[in-house]
Image (cartoon, rainbow over all chains, first blue to last red):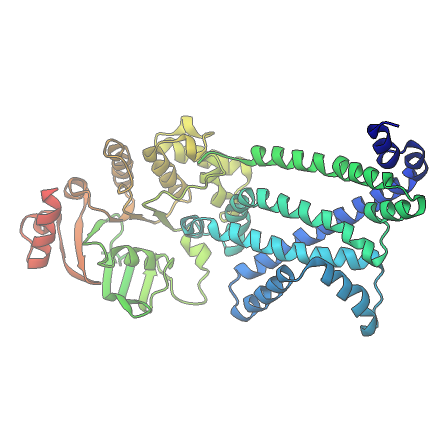
Length: 226
Length: 246
């Protein structure tokens, strides 16, 4: 047996792959569901916090900064474990799926708040002044003048962060979420063969490569010349 | 004689420990063109920005076209429509076309429909000689053209008063003329204008009155010929001498 066929037998075992393909695919569905939920809610919450922060209410801003710094400092795994094992003592018992979703959404919220905030503050003060001098309200200026400019600046760091966080769905294995990695590792222990892990890796590539490419397209699409 | 259209009295402005305006009175009649000159840091831009409350005066009163600008009951966004402002750095919205820049406040503040706003916007661009640039974004326009779009953005709202904060200072010398030309035609149409600028030639020809500020106060004011040729104060003489040497 050549070394290549030994490798193939171990890592690309067709029989094992065929057998566990349905499991991996169901994991893909769970990962997609989780990722979409995390990205949608995390970014929306981050934007909401950044908008609240732009109102400039001091005590509120201290609170926002405290929450944001907390979730940026904690490892996501710790947040997942705290929510999954900690909330039941407060009378709530979120499933592993919900715990993973909430935890990673909080972390993404924290990072995206900072990204949106940086975008908003990077818009020149003259833009605010010009808009306000024509009678636009604070809210109209924010929506029509400042945010469209801020968004263009935030797209690259936001996509990077969203991709990084959604890969964190793999942490859900710890609280028994049956996403890609969870399915792959249980299949691996059941079959005594690492081929399911290779399928999992392939699934991540198939999922995330288009996202990365799409992010690149969006960046060029939204670029404008000053 | 009707009352002044701009009536600012006893304006003080503090920035922390800095006392930038020290009791400034400025009254401007309708159709008058007032030039405000003075060394940098003399408070002339701050004075201008207090008139539309981009800067909150520490004390004093500002009445524009009969509206008490500092009264908390005043709808400041409504009042600001009557006061156009043009900035040194143009401050056009880079993500919109020239027409988009001009029509934004028409739609959002003046409540015009898109079609109405675009018709008024095109007319305003026409007045500054840029009807053919309506679809261009600011990045595709020269500095002089950008400043003229900024003027169009302000006049489209049909303001009663126009404030110009060093409108030509950021422009290459060869582009200054086109902006001054637009300002001259505005003046001829009877617009009340308050201009912070060092364009002495323009001031001499077009201004009704020149106000010289130094150290947060008005040192003296009068017709351009008087201020430029026979200033009463030593500080005015020194300043005029300095800018004329350049």
